[in-house]
Image (cartoon, rainbow, N blue to C red; front, side, top):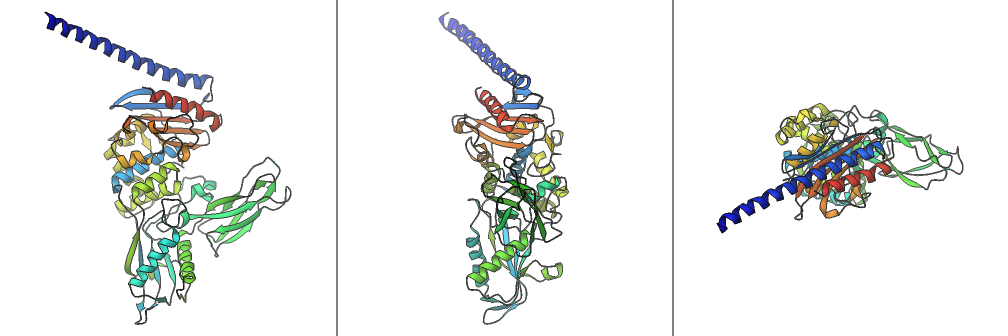
Length: 483
């Protein structure tokens, strides 16, 4: 009798506990819905399109417009980096090969050209801490030359980026974006993320020319024309360096307000392979190597008969993906996408790259095409779209990939430095933003630091400033993390 009574009491207690847990979950879900609707009706999200989805233990626990296709902006990098890690593995390294044409005399003179053959490494000459320093990389290339018996070069230094076919940028990007550092196209052989640094400052008065000096890297073949003028106080910065891969002329246009401080302005460089060859050429000369020729890029006939004598490798893919997500690096993301296309089909044009990544995504989330339209690797394309439901389930499927989870920044890191109220150890989140769009997707972590909830918060067509929308979304992330 006593034992039976204990069993009945225990069963009753479990029923009560289950009922209490269900009630708490229902109240949590209702609080999230009410919060979203309050931000839409009276808050900074008024008039915006908002979609939210959260998944826990394979079950959707939050759903608000979750099947609506929306522009993800840089949340698309989650898709690209995850697929790259799945396709190549976290320890994968890009290779850059060194070779030569011609012959080597007994005294160590190469009567021919040195080739730098790009294999898609996006970190060559990059300024971030992930990349190897340019001088250290050049030292390795010189070691390879020395190891082949080459002591002097009676020829040219040629940068070969021919491994990737097609244009540098996605054809659907807005034209003005392709002039900027964040719209720089990727290439099989690059340098300094294919950007140019300019130092700019206002003229003495409105209407005066803007002061401009190119600081790094050196591109002597590029003819810079300065048409930019100093604007009135308060008018900001609208400078663009208009460049093209069809011309060696570039024009600085726009205005720079008279009350703005001097700054570094970064712009797109369409000649990554040539810049890499030039920088290595300068380094050789500066360190005592005799080079009788010049620098350049080879034609197709010149690539025949290249003797490959060694290679260098990039940092591991896990590090590159973390840099991509923490700093929201468009150039790295596009390089990863094009590398997948090249690996899958030997063709790095965007159509082939998207076919390749879709095959990987289908393996991660079966039926992937039903929830995502991907046009590029970075999310810069306004034609890309994804449903919050698909993104949350994709993140859930990737939650066991440690390298991927750790590639997402914590609050306070990188592009999440504006999230002030989220506990860093509790979240891994990727932001995504462009005009009218602000998105946050990622994970709520358990006490051991493992993903517990995957979520996607996408907002489009917001009229309020991002600085106003951001606190509202931060509050929503906090609510999701309370379950």
